[in-house]
Amino acid sequence: MNALAEKLTTLKKEKDAVIMAHFYQENDIREVADFVGDSFELARRARDAGQSVIILCGVRFMAESAKILNPGKTVYLPAADAGCPMADMITKKDVLELRQKYKDAAVVCYVNSSAAVKAVSDICCTSSSAVNIVRSLPEKRIIFIPDQNLGAYVAAAAPEKEIILFSGFCPIHHRVLAEDVKKAEKARPGAVLAVHPECRPEVLEYADYIGSTAGILDHVRQSDALEFLIGTENGVLEILQKELPHKRFYPLASDFICPDMKKTKLEDILQCLKGERSPVELSEEELTGAAKSLERMVAGK
Ligand code: 13P
Ligand code: SF4
Image: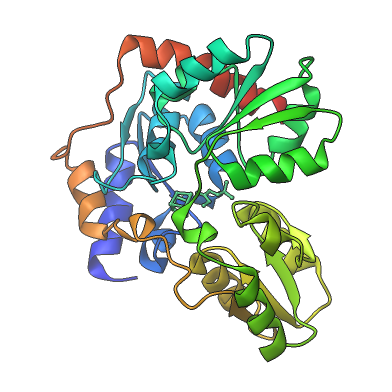
């Protein structure tokens, strides 16, 4: 651990802070974190955090979710400009228009969305809980926002529902095409293909396993196979290669990197701990509206 990382470890205790990081963060950030997880676990841990300060190393919607689930705490997003382009593809106005058009439908909102969008949705989900949450609702018609690919995956897994899709997508996962899979499989014949459901349906068709980042990690840990093609951000591949050096991991695309997730620097965390940054602030309307749909998500997995 370098001097700065050691300083952070001491300072976080003094300031009664907890550092949480998403799997896609850089290795030095994951190393100083008290907890590294997927979106669902980050939300759950943030809700249950006992410390008075939460430092969420990820993108904006993750830090907003932490604030919404634990509004009495001071929450920092160390890389203040780290956003999720998919979350920015839908607005509150879009959701209200869909509600007007499909009056009998429930709105299920992927957690990769703004607080304002969550506030006008019925329930949130993560990639690990989307299918179960959609299935658990009494409504037959579901408006699934904003990810068209996760929505299509849910529609296939829950044929008893009528899923209305929105046009959002993750620019990183959506970039991978069926041709890339064919190329990767040709180069690594027999490798197990584990893919995140934010990838296109034509890519998911080839997958041996489909799941969230945490799901992919667990699947690989439990598998007897020795070679894997990883269909999600390279941070997951790095974690696996470090943890399981006797196995081999290959990316599905060479540039499978989320630039926003790589924005966090140790120096940013230091400034948050010193109180030199502005914590996450949300309006009362966003806090109360989004709390309802997020709490349903965390309780309902
Ligand atoms: P997880 O819910 O699997 O952590 O994924 C979050 C995300 O942003 C995927 O791109
Ligand atoms: Fe958003 Fe995609 Fe980055 Fe995940 S990988 S945070 S969905 S842009």
